[in-house]
Image (cartoon, rainbow, N blue to C red):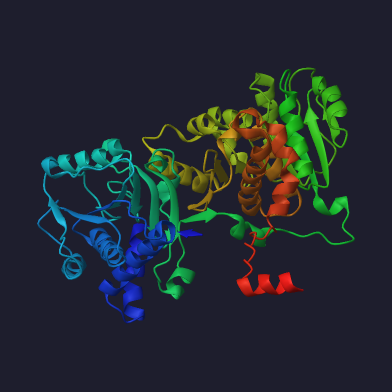
Length: 522
């Protein structure tokens, strides 16, 4: 799914109005009706008090459309206008007049904290105060209103975006933002729904179709894509009847040091479990017996040193190399790493201490092959690109690093983001149970195994991140957050693949009375 920027949404609004020969008021009506349909489907006329807070711009106009339709359908509605300025948008004024035509209970004007209505915990709050156009701090009394929503404990539904939350900056004051239980976002979700510092402002979201011009939606390129099953299924490479292991490449996993051989075992198992034809592990001598006994499917090459990697030398020709897991930062290891990079010709997936070595020796970055894949955790990322002020600064620094060195950068987290060529790919799978030792080693192995099979580096990375998270999600059903471990992610990779082809379960139709009577008489 494409994630449109604020500017692209504005342009889509303009083109939709122009090409469909409608007015901006008509488009606002569509948006408000879609919000109404979402609420009506769930409430079915329930008389729970609904408090709709409308700003004086277009987001407030959407709220007025919603309020009018809820009133016409007999809901218990209280409408408020948050008077934050003397300027009203044209479409807001049109819908303000329309709501006065369907009820004698006109919207209540709010100008200060003394005007705040009482809200019960069982009520519903609809936040339609500010939209994506907000570019300034909110007034103190409006901040108080947002805090009033939160203190009430009422379910809060935001229209398009939680009020006070910008599309391209992190709020300085968390209390000056609505903390929504749910956000109905027009056309596509917003990037801020997926970043660590801003995702907390909406627990859940859903994209709402307001009839945007389809040609515009189809041909417009975006800087960000949201990755789910529908985006991944076309990437899947099926196997033919006469396939053999040689068709799926040879993955070489280089890593390990005394006490950290388990990382190599996890990565190697993951590479084979995701479909690599062959897997070889290159480890210090101390890793030979653990690998041969715990993972008989792998081949093993050992370094001449007992406890560390000191000379990366092998006679095989791997399709791809996964490097760095558990490798340590011994001086001899660093020297061996540099020598290896100078003569390496194979595609690389670089993780863990190999990233730390690169961070301390920037000259080595020039030795990385094009579209080399780096998979740092947050602290490794900081060492690589430097400290950042906020999530947006982090993304800009990461984009620049990726572009400068022509590498694919994976920012691991709750919504892992893959960056390449100035574009973000935001993953939607995974869960907090995967915040466990070895999970990153498994991801390295998965991506390595996919490259081994012929997936292009960017495809392998995005697909690998998706499968890693999906496997963790399926494993979660059996183990829960606390007991999920890295090995479970490997064990459920097959289920993650199968899930790609699962169709949503259909709800069986109920028999009507005539069918039931007919069966009873047969």
